[in-house]
Image 1: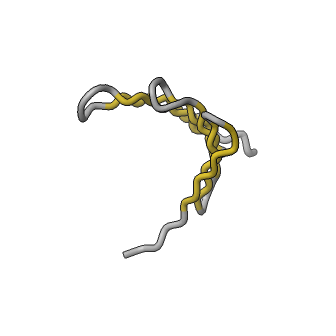
Image 2: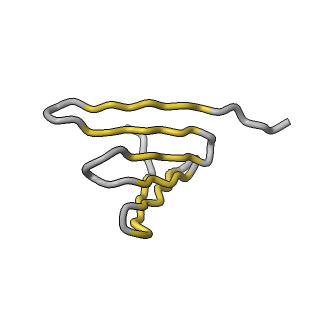
Amino acid sequence: MPLTFRKSFRILPGVRLNINKRSWSITTGGDHGPRHTRSSTGRRTTSMDLPGPFGWRRTRSTRSRRG
């Protein structure tokens, strides 16, 4: 089983800094509404928990502008 690294820090109310082995991201939003995440790799995710075992997620990835 591979080992993984992931750490999440609460930096302000409703704002989290998430760090893993390859990137970092900032998540804004609370428990009772949509959450918006922007990653250092260019990925943007909007997600929301719905009643019951349901959830909604939309992910957009941008291309790297390295040239």
